[in-house]
Length: 168
Image 1 (cartoon, rainbow, N blue to C red):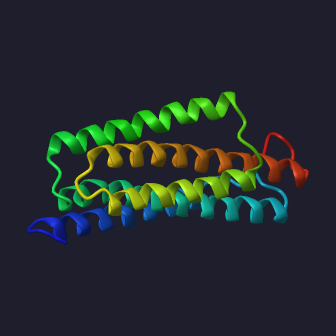
Image 2: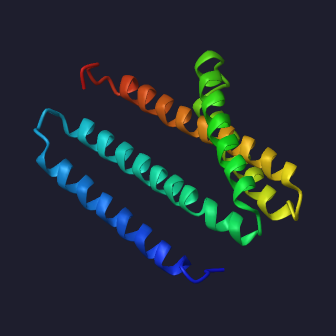
């Protein structure tokens, strides 16, 4: 699957991810201590760890977007259209999530996972049907918007449920 420059692309991307991880750890170690309870430290650490893993997975997905579509034999023009459709779909669905509440946090997570699965299956089932790939990218944008919305709702809910002050 890797072409001539594919290996160097992934190595460079891995180094970039590692550098971002080191910067994140460095920034976290120099922060001033404002948290006063052990429970809040545990909540904050677990949430930030899970959210960071989710963001890393999304970055890996975005990084493999172009090489995967090149491997499928799509020209640059169609890959660009698919990328623009993904960005527009994510933006529109995020705006709709602000206006219309889809459901509970668990429902958003499950729906997001199902939509991600359908989106990924569109890559395997497309076999030359560009319209199916477009639909898959629209579905991916909706899944991404739901995913971020679910994480945000979880953080707000857990923060208030555990009784932490609003300024934390």
